[in-house]
Length: 218
Image (cartoon, rainbow, N blue to C red; front, side, top):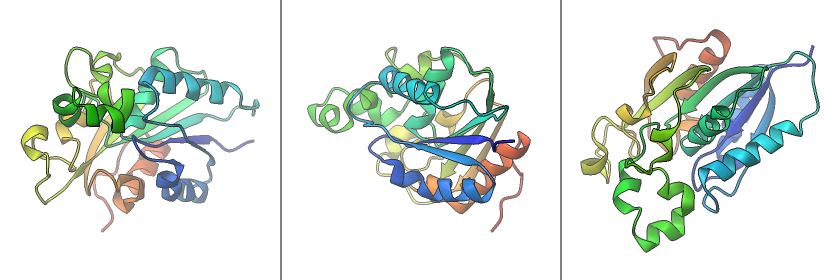
């Protein structure tokens, strides 16, 4: 029997390299791995979701294996957009690290500036918290979802916009989503969540059991 497939989806302005620690951990846990890369700032969320769907459709059939997702930041919103169009029969569990499920306040404040639009692209603009926010317009999940939020002890540069607690870019409150199965907070900043040992430990606990461990390893 083929091992389950874990699909990794990185965040905005990142590459597949940011998910390599997760890929290595996944292989140690016995998963086959698809570390999917995409030009995050060159298209909108719907286009990225469509591209991910085409990649998955092109995979050769492999018996009864299930397909799981482990995402970081924007990657979680892309997977939500993908699955809003219908989940595959082989769908397993989904873990999101630091997802802006309620949108992002920084994107909301800066979305009209030329520099933000140029650097972050359409996806960044779509991550706001207003009426045009893609994350806020996506449906509630109908799949098994676990969310890992980061919490920094030092004040964030955009703290007055984000609210506390936060991981330096996304508030803990914004990661929550009605319909998720479990939620946990780990100590760590937003950008390093994909290589955070506590975050990865919790991610693989959820993928295995459908729940996080209430006590993280030191």
